[in-house]
Image (cartoon, rainbow, N blue to C red):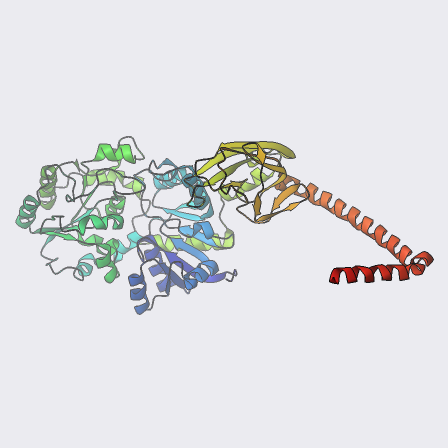
Length: 575
């Protein structure tokens, strides 16, 4: 696969496909620039539909998509997709997907383990630009992602541009047969309830999670007010509302992702067609603020959600410019005020607007594009990428952390080596040769043991000894070789594999002197060079001696005897 970069190629991706800030920026680029664009799509149906419309795209993981990702100068996604694969000659843009009211990144209690945070640090460092709608958002995002704030830019979100130029009611007519012009329309957009773990009350057959939920009562209210509620849950929660046990009000129109995809719409194409928004902790309310219309916060599980996930403030209501309610009765009373034109939170929205938006226009896509052009011409200041030099420099105190590594011992109990059956040991090597010894119990039924000294073959293992219950054992070297008394590795994922066979061993002990190739490679190469030079000298001396012997008078005189000896040996062999 080619590694050259096409400076006029932009590759886009989003979740769900063809949506969010990536979609809005793509529309700007295709209408206003001469850049070539390509979409990486996850859903096959969406892929086919886009191709019919003439949009250049390919299936994620496919050969074409992989080639385009490798060639693009710009990689633009709604999150950090592709960031782990970005090269220094490419520019990765995290267009992001919302103002962070909920905790995310390194503050996200939904994260699983230290490996998640390690990968998060990699991708947040790899990305070059992150969009933000305000200074507060810039500071919050850079803090929660542990990213250099200089690469978090206050461009505004490109998707909000759509709310200014799209005709929401005309777009709604494409996906519903109700009379949208003669009706009062309310948009209900709750946040995701199933992330890496449960977050708040999970949707069942109650789309509002109210203790007093009554679909008939909601219908009566909506009919009396000539109103409809359009509900669009997070695409990850669609499955909750596709079953027969779910009872929705008749005047609630459920929009799933497929309905919008079939019409190449996002919620931002239809947003300005609504009179009010009902949400909970979704960042969509920050975008809706730009329309200066009422927002109702439906939060019956506020305490639980705060305990499960958490917010950027101890009291999230400080960032909610609208009534916060927790029962259906309160919702209907609040909606009655809204539909009657009573909007007591209008001054609150105006007061809090600067916290959420620096700009209130349809130019966010243009601003982001201009930032991308600056990055293309001038580069991006990013301490995250530069800090590697601080670790490499031996005079820096950060260098001491380079001398810490992690070894893993895996046990195959019949299903192969896996993450569920391993022991992890951290150890240090501060230059030179360090003596190490790891001892671990062997589980019952174990067929083989695998020792990974590190992730990338950084260490040479001198005088490696493997003991099974105190007895030396044979081992196989994977991705490496043995030279004299040391084992060296030439690929990532170095391994030492010890087959147990039918032996019922209880303990394994692995001993070696670690040689850090990062700091000692030059010394080792020089030592091997000297040994090779000495060997060549010995060989040359031996060849000279052989030459002297073969040209001597005594060697020539005894040649018949040597020939006779070889003949006798040949006859004996044939017998």
